[in-house]
Structures are given as structure tokens and as C-alpha cells.
Image (cartoon, rainbow, N blue to C red; front, side):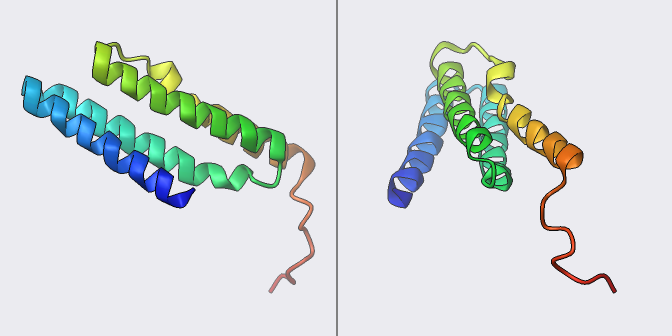
Length: 112
């Protein structure tokens, strides 16, 4: 599974640079690379939602949809920013729930 994820990342970067070589559009290259870096960052930060399985599953689905939104931008040149940045919603929801209910790990480590 990890190899498939790494392969998908390499293929995405290759598609981005192939589109740049075809069109020579520097603005599109920077937007695509920035959005791709943001999607990868949100996927990594989304691991914090793992204790709450429904939110984590929703986060994974939104990351996949964001990746699809990037592919739509590369192919059709339509930038759906709300799709690309939608994984932020699950992270914010998780942090809000943690603030309201607590983490359940209070008192595990003694305070200095």
C-alpha cells in the first residue's frame, strides 16, 4: 500500500511537469505544485484525527477528492479551491471536538 502511495505521488509530480513542458505556463506550474504540497501536508497532518475513526475516514475521503481536484485542474484548467482545501474541515472538526470534550489523556503525564 505504501508503494502505491509513493507511486501515486511520483506520477502526480510527473504529470505536473509534463503539463508544464507542454504548455510552458509557469503560473499553472506554481499553483499545481503549491496545491500538491498543501494536499500532502494536509494528509500528513490529518493523521492527528486517527483516534476518531469516522472523522479519519472522512478525512481520507476528502484527501482523495482533493487529489482529484488537482487532477481536474491539470486536465481542464479549472481550479476548485474548496475541493482542494476541504481536508482542513476534518482537522478543524477534530480540534473542536478535542477542545470541547478533552483528549481523554489528561493526567497521564505528571506536570512538572
